[in-house]
Length: 147
Image (cartoon, rainbow, N blue to C red; front, side):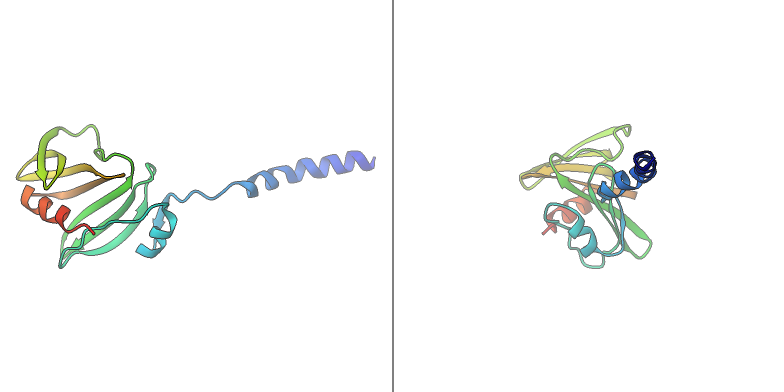
């Protein structure tokens, strides 16, 4: 009878023991850039342009660090992860490429209205999404400001 009671107790506690053994997923929103930086396994190289303020910090399902920047009513989302850069929405129409220094930057949209851009530099992939779009010159300045 004691063995049966112990077995029943073990079966009741098993889901709790299994649940507690899992690590919490780092995917989600963070309150500060420092918290996001602590959640990723690589350094963050971010744009640094006058007037643009980082306002939201996320680690998305593709394990890309996403930082939303705002200046007045305009926003853009900057993405970074180990590996190669790729489009945020592969269904968007490919627009072309531009060269920024030694980098080849692919984009969706037109050179006057880029909605998504991506590139690879060293061991990291980067991307920018601009809901209101940005020009090739604005994108070039943004990429040049990454530190």
